[in-house]
Image (cartoon, rainbow, N blue to C red):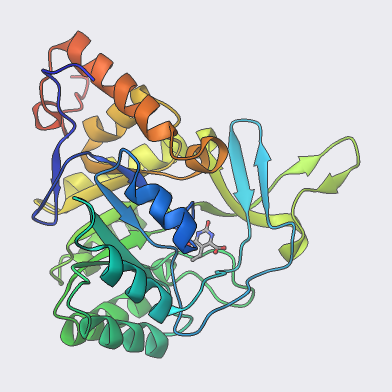
Amino acid sequence: MSSNQTLKTTLAGFHLGSCLMNASGVHCTDENELSGLLNANVGALVTKSCTLESRTGNPLPRYANIPNGSINSMGLPNHGLAYYLEFIEKSQYLHNKIAILSIAGLSKKENLELLKNADKADSIKLIELNLSCPNIPGKPQTGYDFEASEKLLAEAFEISTKSVGVKLPPYFDMVHFESMATVLKKFPVAYVCCVNSIGNALWINVENESVVIKPKNGFGGLGGMYIKPTALANVRMFYSLLDGVDIVGCGGIQNGQDAFEHILCGASMVQIGTTLWQEGPACFDRISNELSTIMQQKGYATIDEFKGKLKSMN
Ligand code: ERO
């Protein structure tokens, strides 16, 4: 990185050394993977979304790399809340980055229980409430039900004294962007992360005329290059609708230019999923260097100089 450029950012009031981090679900399910992130060139890391008890998830194969992307139907495999609380407790003084706890209860009751338990842990500073898991058979994504989202958030913010951000599914209709923004404005959300994978996509292997993952007859969350334009639209829209709320961009970040585009749309931080899965934590060095080079070429010393400054055409 050039000495003049810095990727420093702030998220929910926390000052972070880099605007890059992992997307929940990738390289963050067990201690080994999480430790890899603690040692990587990231400003924060987020754990695999967890439930109260551990889960084995959906049958294998449940993740597939596809050209320039991924499809997954993991089904929320995780080691349970206590495991992630312990990891964050152990690692909190070791490295100069924040570890975010991601939770994804299968019901409102479970989400509230997760928040209640996390509230007792001093080491937990920031929580990402996942409203957008697309892969649990029979469970709709909470973020697509505005009334259910509002009810959950109302109780969540009653219970929790922590900073709580939300991870949203992608929206595709202006009315839906506005409906979710109206809900979010009622609560002190710490940040809004746009977007989770595009749910229930289908990838086909033409050679054997088959789907490529086993669960749900091959239907799964789409990640990677295909979802970048949708992710950028969501980042931009929520940045515009939610004045002053930090936005975290996620979706289709393969290189420094993709990260630059997310920040230009308003992201304070960017999460990397598919590329991290495919390349491992070394991707953060590469993407940091690429982003710094673009900033240098354009004469930007900090990300604040271009964050949210996407131009419209008159
Ligand atoms: O299947 C999963 O574990 C999963 N996959 C995603 O693409 N997004 C999720 O939010 C998720 C589980 C919470």
